[in-house]
Length: 236
Image (cartoon, rainbow, N blue to C red):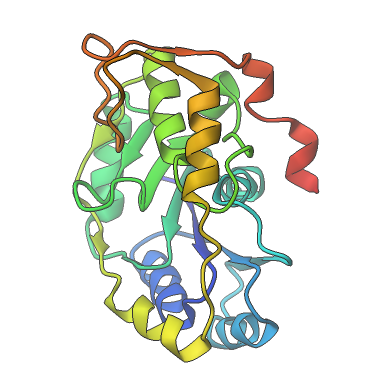
């Protein structure tokens, strides 16, 4: 199975190196590191440690929202299946076979770190993105871009597979953040406002992290599909 793995990092030198090395040694032949606005010394350290030709590097300065990084992963990936992971994911033996089994079962969206952090590592087939559009870059920083994608999957009638195939461990990343003194530019409040503006929520409210049930909580998209992703933003 031909798979591209893209790891998004902002301040996790050790974890990003570990994640990409784990993916390559367990079968992946196309690795992408997206450095989301961290210091040049951070990227230099990772590139020095990852000298294999299968690795490619995208350096963003300043940092962009997580959806922008995910879109870049899809655009630069060489293979139809694209695994997108946070830098605190550990790829161990068997993850690629587990993904292949779900692909053979007809799934085109597979979350690999279920249930601890289902969107911390997930896989998409490019044909699904071609039908649904890219991730919505109206969500700056992080938060609610995953909720938006989950609802769009429901609207599209696509059922994701939820499997536990990789290990999510943020202990070392916390150590990295202390070492580099870098803080994530979190934007929960702004993204929640963008989410509510995009989706019309019933008076019963909404539940996040993929727990929205269309029968219990009616949600209607109020923004047209063309606004999900202006293609020009990908190259900005």
